[in-house]
Image 1 (spheres, rainbow, N blue to C red):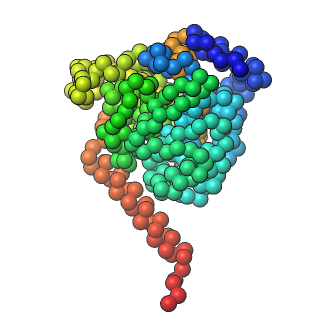
Image 2: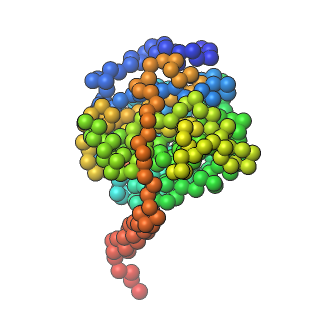
Image 3: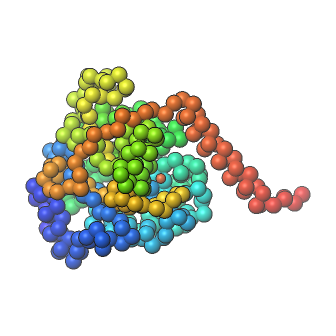
Length: 357
Ligand SMILES: [Fe+2]
C-alpha cells in the first residue's frame, strides 16, 4: 500500500491518488447539480502532529422536499470519490418536519468513511432527538457539547474532534465541550454557527468548520455579504476566515485566561485560529443558488499540508463586523423551539384520534 510521505503538495498527491483510483477531477461545469468541490490545507500547527488526513466537510443537507434526493446522492458520491478519512457534517439535516428521516438515514449511511455530526437550528425546530436517532442509525456519531478522539487513516493518526451543539437555538455550551480537551492531540472544531469559532480558538482549537448561512445562496454583487453580514449580523458569511498560522494556545494562560489584547467586543484584535463556513448542499425554503460563492459545496481539508502549498479556492478573508444577537432575540429563538415541539405533540395527538375507554 502506497502511504503518502509528508505532504509538500497535498493537491499533487491527491491528483495522483485519484488517478490511481481511476477518478477524474470534475471541472466546475461538469459537476453534478453544480456542486463545487473546494480544497484547502489545514492549520500549520497540525503539521508537527499529522502527516496526512483528508477530511470532507458537508453542511446543511436539508434532506426533504426542496432539495432533490439526487442532489444528496451526488454529494455523497463526490465525497466518497475523494476517499476521505473522515466526513464531518455541521447541522441542518432536515427542513421543517420529520417526514424525510428515512431518506436522511440513506444519505448519511452512504458515506464510506467514519462520520461525525453536530446539529443545527432546523434540527431543533423539527425534533432534535428524532434527527439525532436517525443520524445514529445511519452510523454517524453526534457530538453535543463534547469531544472525541479518533484514530484515522493509513498511518493511524489521532485527531480530536470537538462538536458544539446548535448556538442559534441556544444549545451551545462551550465550557462543557472543552472540558478534558487534550492539548497533545490536534483538535478540529465543529459548530453549526461559525461565530462560535472565536470562543473555541482560545481553547486550542485552531480550525472550526461551520454552516448555517448557505453562503447566502444568491451571491451576485456580493448580495450575501449585505443580507447575511450587514443585515443579519454574521461575522463569517462564506468560506475561510481568520488565520491557519495562529496557534490558539498561546493566547491562553494556564487557567484559561486570555493573554491577547481584545477589541472591546469580546473578540481578539488578531485572529487566534481559522473558521470555514460551507455553502451547504440543500435548502429549506428557496432552492435558488446564484453566483459562484452560493453554489452547493463539498469541501476537502488536507490536514498536515501547509497553507499555501497548493492552489486553494480562496485565501483567508477579512470578517464582517458582526453583531451578537440580543438576549431578547435569543429568548425568542429558544421559545420557537418549544412552540414547535408543542405543535408537533398536538398534531400527534390529533392524528392518533380519540382513545377508546
Ligand atoms: Fe441551513
